[in-house]
Amino acid sequence: MILRKVTTLTSSAFRWFAVLTCLMTWLLIGVGGVVTSQGVGMSVPDWPNTYGYNMFYFPFSQWIGGIFWEHSHRLVASVVGFMTLLLAVWAQGKNGRLWLRYGFFPLGLLASLVVFLRIQENQAQHLSITLGFAAVVGAVSFFWPRMEPAPKSIRRLAMLALGLVIFQGMLGGLRVTLYADQIGIFHATLAQIFLVLMASIALVVSPWWQRLKSVASQHGQSVRRVSAALFVLSLLVLAQLLLGATMRHQHAGLAVSGFPLAYDQYLWPPTDAAFLDQVNAERLDHREFEPITASHIHVHMVHRVMAVGLFMAACALMVWTIKWLGWHHPLSRGVTGFFSLISLQATLGVATVLSNKAADLATLHVLIGALTLVTGCLMVLAARRSLSLANVPSPVRLKAEVTSSLKPEWSSAGA
Image (tube, rainbow, N blue to C red; front, top):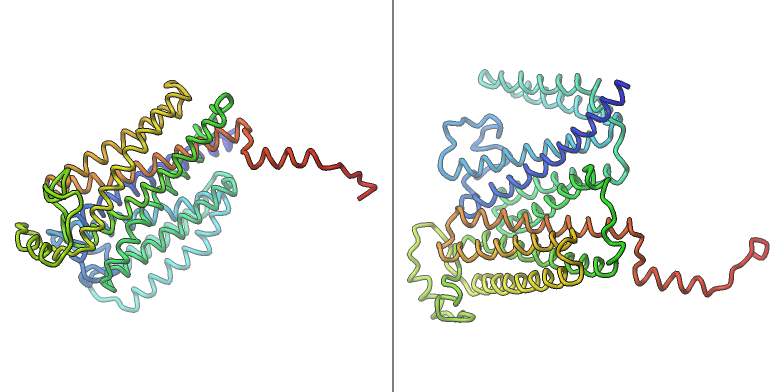
């Protein structure tokens, strides 16, 4: 009876820890948005150290200006990576103790040895902290994790998240060491995908997912169509976030001013050399941005056009869903929330333009964009779950069943 209570408590703690990891990932994206919005991504020019210091021992007195945000971004990223590692170990259940005992404990001792070989007087505390961490890992491995192993699908998702966060950290380091803005674009986009993965894990392990009842029994095909539309719109949101990351990592600031017309007079501004020279000469911005080029303008305008298309498509989907499923259907309310987030995102985009890309508005724009993507993806998962519970056959499956029913049955003797 006691073991059952402990197992239940640990499983509940695992679910809440998955939610907390998801929230920390969202916070990490916000801090990264501040870094790019303020153009301070290279305030710390070395990696994994910070101005020669071990990242975790960098003096707080030197956290000034852009260094504060860039260093904070690294520390929050380290916390997210550590939490993802714990989640992956935790998902293995009692088998995870072997990971700690024979994997991370020797690594901790090895790290201690490396520090010891390079020790100086002011590094004694570093050695003691590293040894202490290794000792804690070794001790914890004798009683944690307690719960039974999670289902294989959850374990695989947790391992995928661990591999993804390691790769994401390497991309962040290469972005600094190679001084490559293109890597930063993929780094920002991968962060969105990682957030979706973490949110999916939190959803699938939640009690709500286990208690989810079918809402597709009477409107199976309509739910299927809405799910497919949401999937397409979520992909478009991801593409929109990719364009936003491209604009932020171009370090050109606000490439196109004015709204709703570009520069208050063009539907699509010209990009000839004379126009670009005029725009760059008239820029009155104290921030050190790169000169605007034709590619900057094109990416910005495509971002605007896609925003309008997403808004109109989400509005049409909301109207169609309410018409065919009714307002009280859970999917109708979810699509309405999805449309509300896209509307808020569009409003923040307009405010960002009118404010000449104020850092706080641009960062909030990034956060709501990530939340919109997660909402769309989780709704697709919930709809597919509902369809599976209702056992609504897809057109391909239905055709296969009809075809198989027309074939002659062969007896085992004849076979």
